[in-house]
Image (cartoon, rainbow, N blue to C red; front, top):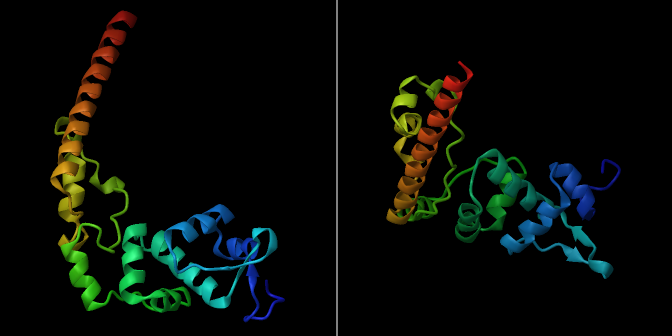
Length: 184
């Protein structure tokens, strides 16, 4: 790609290589973000303009680098427009507009980064004794703005899932204990 002009159109394979993502992800993003409109030629070949590439770089940065959800990114594109995401793709600063920020706090699908996976610092011996200890420690350590909003349906589902996991652990412990006594 170095031998092309910065204003030249790029093929899907060039863009995929540049962004270090598979081509099918670019095609998937086209279905989720109506702002991605590559020029299509015979046989369905896609050609991306420089603005398309900047938009894709911004989308990649927000989804993969910052942890935004597709729904959150759709909201950013709707409220702040594709030019904002293109600027992010060109290395610009990530700023949530005041209107988007207040709407983000009111709606469960806010465009805020999702918390990453818990790290080893949250593993504690009490986690074995108290179900959910590690998750509670992680959530309580996050700033309030980064804590997930959980609806009643989600909470009920999570409680049911936790009950199932506790029962699975009980069954596993019983099986391991009976296996240990048989070996002895």
